[in-house]
Image 1 (cartoon, helix red, strand yellow):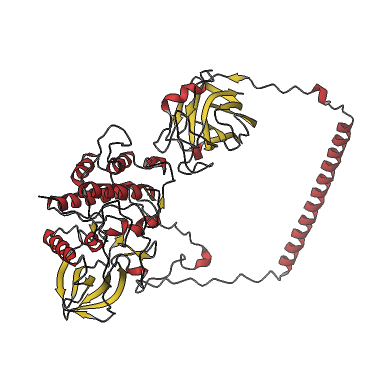
Image 2 (cartoon, rainbow, N blue to C red):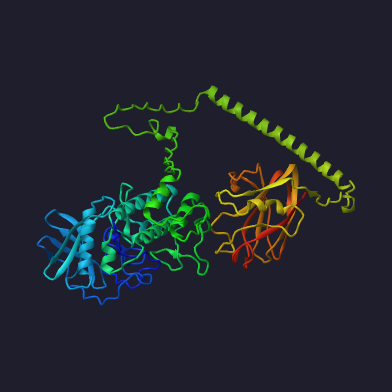
Amino acid sequence: MAERSTAAVDVADNSGDEPLAAGAAKATADGVDTQNRQAADGPMPEKEGERASVAPSAAPELHSGHKLARRYRLEECVTRLDGFSSWRAMDEKLRRAVGVHLLPADHPRARSVLAAARSSALLGDPRFVQVLDAVEENDLVYVVHEWLPDATELTALLAVGPLEAHEAYQLVSQVSQAMAAAHREGLSHLRLTPSAILRTSTGQYRIRGLAVNAALRGITSETPQRADTEAIGALLYAALTQRWPYESDAYGLTGLPKGVGLIAPDQVRAGVHRGLGELAMRALANDGATASRQEPACTTPEELAKAVAAMPRIRPPEPVFTAPPEYQHTTYQQGSYGRPTPPGGPVVQTLAVTPPPPPLQSRTGKALKWGVAALLIAALGLGSWQLADTLLEHSNQSSDNQHQPTTTGDDAPEKKAPEPIAIKRGEEYYPDGTPQDLDGVPHTYDGDSSTFWRTRTFYDGPEVKVKEGLGIVYDLGAEQDVSAAEIALKYAGNHTTVTLYATKNMSSQTPVSSMKKIVGATSSNSALKLTAETPVKTRYVLLWITAMPQAGADDYTKPGYKQAITDVKFAG
């Protein structure tokens, strides 16, 4: 069946919309972008040739309380732009909230809006927000659609942070399958922005505005399947990185740095699932320039859905259980075991405390008291005599020590200079699963100053922000005292920060927090010398970089924050 093209994917923000008095609490269903405080499905700059130039008619002058077909009572206007308006309304017949798009019957796009709404209604796929009615009446054209008060826009979810890998997998899987089904019926969306994706309380993703949102703006595309696929790739990229994969900021998300082009998600944020990151690149880079340079680009939602299905299934995160409160030990002062008596439970009787007997007042009692007093006085006298004897003996010893000769500084043993320690082997340390230059590690101890281990280029710095750090673990062959190191760097500058840690093994799964710090320093040129106050005995040493200088482009990497190591020497 021939495709019905309606809109192309946009890469800019919603500038130009006229936000109205829509409440933020209703953003999940009324089409308002709560991050930009603009209409969620407002106009965006289209690619050349994708939007017809028309003079929009004036939007109908309606107000809250107006009733359509004696049934739909308008309650709140959430969008007014380009000759049409969108409302939250009440279906008084079925007593439920609905959404309504309104435009004049003589609007240049009125007929295409009606056709798109009726085609979308015929699809009947529950993965889309359903069109309930499409009517021309009294010089008005209006489209009534579902209202989902319990759903949350993807825009709001991304405002909190990137999605967990399993949630991002569910997003791309459900949206790509739904759009593949729509394209099989000749329908396209082409305005698949974060505000068009809703997540219900049951964890299902639903798509609103199929065909209708684009028809309202008169947007068309010669390649609707490719445009929808690229839009899904942009949604997945944003879900993984919390960044919009174009230079312009949009939907409350920061765009990529200008002039660097499309970069892989794992270069934007640490810990990105590699398979999902490559899938986003395959959907975005439709010219075949994929992240891995191995898999073909996805140009249709069907191809993307098959690629998602071919991935190993990503398990949901383990549920987090709250630890029970610590047992409260009872004390005598808390009464009956420190626990309140439950309603209806047996009453615990407490025993009366018998007061102590009065002091002895007889003749025998008085004699006993005087005897005890005499013993106490004798004990105090004996203790005082022993204390005085001990102090006198200590004073004599101190006097003797003053006459003993002292050792001068010239007789103290000289401090030995650190001796070089040979490196047996090295491996890159990358706890986030994203290495920098696995094959370059041996170049850091081969004695050749023309070979290097290199980091990738990062666009935020000098501190490494998208990862905890970058590092190499060295095996010294046996446990040795490590107290100093010399590191030769390729890029000079005063921002390379290196810390040495003693670790138990060479595994990247060993966290830095469990290691013992040896010494750390920041460079001022292309050489870095580190000397510890106290040697640390270890076999394995981690060289951990947490900041790098800015450098220009070379034969290997683009300009940005980066570093390369040519020579590492340890001593102890």
